[in-house]
Structures are given as C-alpha cells and as structure tokens.
Amino acid sequence: MQSAEPELKALMLASLGGDAAAHRTLLDRLSRHLRGYYRRHLVRSGRGAEEAEDLVQEALLAIHLKRHTFDVETLFTPWVHAVARYKLVDYLRRNRISQSVVPIDDHRDLVATGEEASIESTHDLGRLLGRLPEKTRRTIEAVKLEGKTVAETAARYQMSESNVKITIHRGLKALAALIGRETRA
Amino acid sequence: MRTEDLVDVLGRSHQPVDRAIVRRRFVMALLIGGAFAVCVAIALLGTRPDLATARAVGFVAVKVGFGTAIFSLAAFYLVRIARPGGEGRVSLFVMAAPFLATVALAAAVLAGASPAHWDRMVMGQEWVECLVSIPLIAVAPFAAVIWAARRAAPTDLVGAGAFAGLVAGSISAMAYALHCTDDSLPFVTVWYGGTIALCTLAGALLGPRLLRW
Image (cartoon, chains in turn cyan, purple):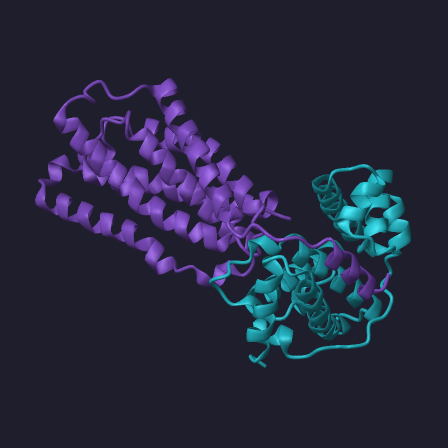
C-alpha cells in the first residue's frame, strides 16, 4: 500500500518544521502501523501482543529521538521501516530469540496493515519516570500530565525555556534507555 | 503504559528539528579527523625531503588524487548509509570504480615495463612502512567519523562501519602521501589501495560494536 507514503511524508516534513500537531498525528499513525508489523512478526516466535506493544513504544521513542536523521530528499516509509526493523532485530538479539523470524521484508510490509486497538505495554510510565532525576521527572510530568506549555513550566520552576526543552529531551533519552533495558525477557 | 500516553509526551516535547545536523556533524568530523591525520603523519614521519621540487609535487598530486577520488565517493555514500535505511542507496559498483581504474592503469604501466623492474615497481623501498603507517594514521579520522555516524543512527552497522573505515583509510593515505617516496603507480595501487581495503575491513568488523545505538 504505497499510498501511505505521500501522506506520512507530508506529516514528517511538517513535524520537522516544528508543527507539533503534525508530529502527534504522525506518531499516532505510525503506532498503528508498527503495532500491526510487530504483532505479525512476533506471533511467529510465540510472543504475545504485550511484547509487541513494548516494541511499538521503543520504536516510537527511537523515531522521535532520531527524527533529525531523516533525509528530506528521500522517501519516508523506507526510513521508518529501517528503524522499526532495526528495533525488532535488536529486541530478538537481546532476548536471545532466533533471528530466523526476522522477515526479509521491505518498507511496503510496514505500512501494509494498521492495528488500531492498543493494549497496555509492560512498561509502567509512572514507575519509569520515578527512576529519572527529580528535576527531569517533574518537568516531564508538568508538560505531559498537566498539559502545561514549555513557557508555563519554565515559569513555574524558574528555569529558562531552553533549559526546559533540554531537560525534557534528556529525560526522554533516559526514558528510552530504561525502556530498552526493560524490554528484556 | 498506554502507547497513547507516550505519543502524548512525545507530541508535547516536540520542537523544530535541525535538518542539516547529520551533514554538519560529518563535515566537522572530517575536518578534525583530516587535520589530525596530517599532523600525525608529519609529526611521526615528516614530509619527504624533496617535497619542494616540481617532480615530487607531481607524484604527491597523483597519490592525493587517488585518495581524493576514493574519499569523495566514500564520504558521499557514508553520509547516506549512516542514516536509517540508507544502505539501499549505496552503489558498491560505483565505489569500486576508482580502485578498478587504478588497477587497470597500474597493469598498463607494468605491461609497458621490463619484467625485470616489476619487483621494484610493485614493492618499492618502503612497503612495510606504508602497510603500517596508513592504518595507524587512520585511527584518528576513523574515531571522528564513527562519532558522527553513530549519531546518524545507521541500521546497517557492518556497511556503515566499512564506509567509515574506507573514508578514514583514504584520508590517511592522502596524509601519508606527504611522506612516502615510492612513486610508481603499481606501488600506489597495491599498497595504498591494499591498506585502504584493510581499513575498510577493520571498519566492517568494528561497526556492529561501535555503531550500535
């Protein structure tokens, strides 16, 4: 289903330009494709939907943190597919699952299906956040749980706005590392 | 955790992205790595004594030209293969072209010379020094390029490592050319080409270890 490409790429370009709504929509759209992709391939190795959801979240974090590596001159779905597949291989290696289930697929395989219904992953966001440094945790919580803007958060904790942004970025990186470490059987 | 919650966090922490950063990191790594390579080559080996003569400049230019041809292609492809999915946008055939062209030229040179001279033309005076120096001088540019490549999130670690080694080897060969007085084309083909290939192999082997993200 090649038709996903123009739409996803347009969202990605808008997102890179700083459009937060586009970024959200993109991640939301991608999470459905990723869910379908991981469920399809993990079921073959006898793994459940929960683990697929763990991988969906790991891949979303990777896509978010590595979005600057997308070359705007190229197609977007091969880029996402490469990240998704890399995370799958990484997951199988970490859990010592035979790599024979790794599909010899191409990027069309990723966007071929979408799986709407998400389930809880094994990660507990509250607990993961609790393992971050105090300042990082409360910054992410203010912006995430309470829906504050960066400016409001900066004012509340008497930080500069760029400091808030950097703190959140570092926090997400740390979160990604924690999730990566946890996604191990 | 529900994935919707994660998307929520990520959506809110979004900000405009610097799209040129991958390229800029590579430029920085290549400048620093190149400067290091030249400094190491000069400090360790010194420049060739006849460097000021027109004859020597011509020979150095040929060797640097050989290095530049490989370097330009390798750097161009490295910036591609270092990104997710970039492995599909690399042509090994094009990459092999400068090597094949030099091999053909070297063969023509040998064919035109008396077989009695072949041994000296290929082995030169200092093939051992060349074999040791180029990989050694390549260490600094290799480290710099690996630093930049890892941050570009490669998904083919062996391939990206190989291209990082190829880039570092070609930089190193150009720096070593300032010192080396073996000027025959067959020598350059075998020992420069060979050591650059060796650097590429080392990069391919180290890639999965150094480039994981």
